[in-house]
Image 1 (cartoon, rainbow, N blue to C red):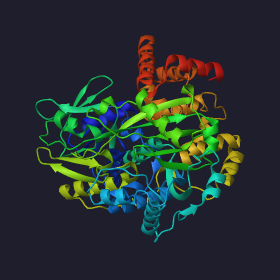
Image 2: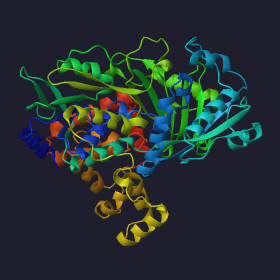
Image 3: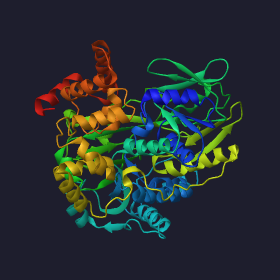
Image 4: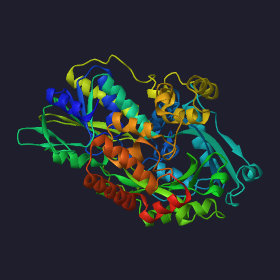
Length: 560
């Protein structure tokens, strides 16, 4: 469905039952829930899908080990269940991640941890073996009825050194447990969006919601055209922007959000990649902040920070944030130095946490809930949440909405496969070989497509062809994404529809090739194409730490 068709259908459906504002992971989740249950639903996203916090996550799918200290047992149970459901429903993107916690003491952190749990202290203390053992035992207990992943194990100093020779020699022991990671979160969200559209919902990116004096209007961000829209219920799923969205649509609501910013780096350092031995290291910085480092699509992801922020649009991974992350990394791998040009991408997002007066950001609850602001129409605000629990949060919001609409649920999504996770092979190697034999394409090409699209690769491979000369993608593949996935900008294509940007494969030549494809598809003039190129380069510089000079150096090393 192209953009013009979507707009014509929106004009023909000016009074949907539900209007969702916000196309992040939570907005898309509730959109899918409602559409699959037969509700007339429209979703509008002012920028691009998953262009806010939903595209700036740590790429972890986890129970939240550290939330146990806050007493958020219900959230940890729910998160672990949703983690296991994602491992089953989206195996093409969500996979097990062995995680090791270095241990530097035995009893340290017990007193400070107990006082924090009882809300009697905010002081951080390094967590020792006993405290870590307690947390991991609870983790295992919460999943005892469904053993999707192995239980935890402790290692002494000798085995810890054997597993991680470059680890800080002060580590007296380590503990390994399992969580999961997501390779392409934006693509997972797009697959869910597509399922909602296939079920009858309408979704449009680059489309904001405002007022016209008579009610709400949807404004097309491409040509500025306004379309009146009169829903029975609005769902505000704009995360860190919830309060700003309520104000823009005339909803009289108290302050609901008090977000914090988290920044991450993507590093291309072979020594660091080898030092991780295929695992994530989950460690503490000197200020008690939990940090992570793990292999990600051939590179290394390191993060994160946790600082208050009032303006979600100002969330930028600054040089100071970068210095903080690298300093924390040097504590755990002191012999490994990351050079500035080895940082191939950096990004930041705002955690949509509920408004809180607590002075310590780590104490702000990570749970989620819905709050309805009565009005005409009423507005249901989705507050809080974390990426791992998007399905259960979406189901909660959908159930609340359907209850108000007098609609009964007909489909539960808990065990429903997502997109290319359907019929995912138990033996991917055999599946790849069989498809390669049928299509005549190289197995390496089929393998790459399976990673990107799951079992949908079977229907896409032939059309995408054997060539992969634009940062590992063919021109036909990129043209397909432009034509079928509402790509309107270079950032849509290179940062969210693909992992070209985040994995350091971006260069000036790649940008030029993709701009040619996008310009041809959209019928842009030379002036319009030049403006898009400059806008994208500015975005890369200000938000992702990539200058024109660094992109040019990549062209000198690697052809497009």
